[in-house]
Length: 405
View (cartoon, helix red, strand yellow):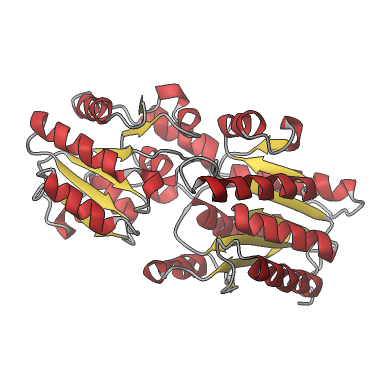
């Protein structure tokens, strides 16, 4: 691809992620592909085929003026022949596009993209680890392979980004991937305006799913996968229902465990008290109508639903895992409970429902930490610094002063 006609030099970037699905890494990649234009960057976003049930990720990208390039083979595969073919294909794409920077997200895309970038002679290579991928996601053999891939990829990287200080500690102490000095902490950057400007309890979500206006509504959002531990949410719901008999529970998302979870809900006597919605387009409406959002995962990086819910004024309860304690300031911004303890989770849910909640401290914290403008500025400084070390410099883009939220 040739340079666009412009009076200023453009920094070309190739951004890679694995599958184009509705999750934190992909949404972050889409938003940054759009936002970094303001700082003089042109981005080619590459990802694997979206799952059939999540086609709206392409619509979300289009709404930001981003057109991802789909590589059908770019999935979480460990097939050596497939990996070699993908590296060759990516290296060819990089030689054609000639990016100044390759920035990868997720382990598989991170390994393939960084190796291809080194082969293609890309000046700067950056990788973001959004989650701690070595607990709760894969079996022991697969986990060991991914640890080796991350260690190898770290040697190819000019910089590695994590989303929280806790995640950096884990990556340098529990399963050392690289030295602490080579990892920079940059929290997520999100467009939180739809949530901060939203009114509470509008009723649109409850009306759509036939949930009464006057009952406590407790929700959970995410892929229905083992690591998300929805079974714990259901166990806690059964206990909560004893104390709060009119409580209603909603599970937003889809995935391989849905049939099992539906059977479990019925076995726990939750029929009539729980709604499975699958994926929904207007998640803001759900935050508006929820009285509480729960995260019950075995492991997490920096989960988007918690940030969005707090920005929307909805209180949260979450398990003390991964990057969640950092996100919630050790419990100041939301209740933290031990993982795999349904009684503790249920008690935290009931206590939160019965306590007057002031949403302003958490809302302000989310905007200050996770607004996309802050991340774009931080990344611009990082990218230009790394390019300068390689002898590649560009004039700095000037921007109008930001309006306050």
